[in-house]
Length: 320
Image (cartoon, rainbow, N blue to C red; front, side, top):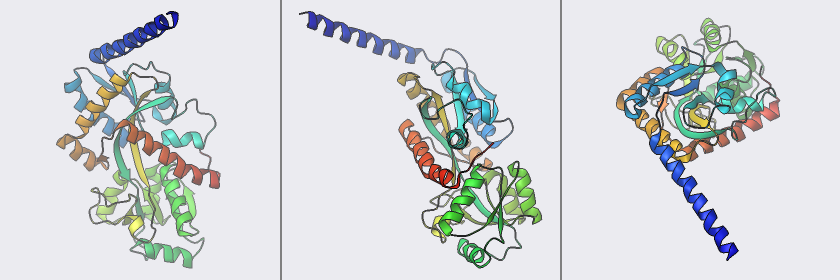
């Protein structure tokens, strides 16, 4: 009898907890929502503000974009109350940086709840027009014929452009010298000026220079052709099977955020991303709208950490 009373009590408590969660979810949101992201003025900031504008009317609350930069954005959200009012919008540096640094105060998996993979952007393999290559196969052949003579630029040590270049070298079996810069604009300027010859650049930053003919695009880093560059073949289909270098950007909440709130946020972000005007503006800025499920974002992060984590470990890459 005593055991039965205990079971009944536990069932009642569990029912009350579920009920409280449901009520909380129905009441959400009742105040402004904050999306924490990188620095102001960049592509990440633009995408965040575009998504935020799509949420305001359907959620009935103001959506505020808070620019905290790469170092401060993730821990700000990790330490926030798990109530759905503080979210993180960030890309692969958020989950890859802990593999290259020891001074970060967050765990990208344990401290966050995934909401949706919002947008993606393939890296674009570009070269200076003076380089006598017009395909990936020709670039690999030239690099093998001239080991150590070619160089490629990256926006920083440990940045996506650096990892993309090292992955290319490892898979192609070529020796191309890495030249790290402090920012994508400086790196692209030197590529345009001929100081460096190759780069895996972001779509948004490289697109104007490709269209003007100042640099030549050879291929995209996505597994399939990208709507951002119609007609440009994937690296994987152009001489390097299995190659992939794509920037993925997701929305996260602090770990412990109620499931009802995660579900509501997921629905609202996907709805905003599926709007035709939002898709077009994102595409024009150099990213493609996705709007995945939370498990799909979690799987994408895990895959990215596993695949690139091996490269980081094998090359002992350490970022500042």
